[in-house]
Length: 154
Image (cartoon, rainbow, N blue to C red):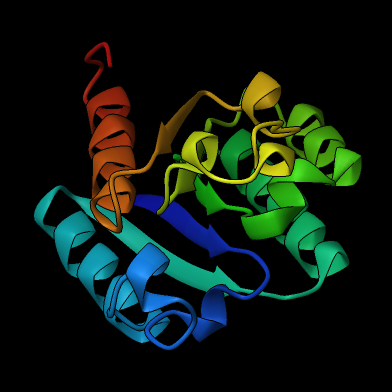
């Protein structure tokens, strides 16, 4: 099995109750269970974490960078929430653990929302970005990491 971290940033603990017209009705627990099940079917050992605190997210990225260098991790699926648009620190953390693949995921289409959401500090250091496909974006990111593990181009 290949270890993957599904990491969620601020306010994603409110999934299912916060703006369901934008983010859908699934709770974070639902999304995490779906990711673990989907990953298992693809030979991935999915660990899920969420924090509203930037430093805690950075610590997890660093930890998984160490695990990647030790051959114990495949990558991170990361929904940084609003930190996408504000956090140079998360940008630097991801850059600091290269070549660990980090796939940026957003449930909503941030480009169809407020102008301040159009800038991502994560995209330039991410292996890829999946935006606006709902919670299926997490599954597509897991597929991309599984394909990398199998040596297939994504």
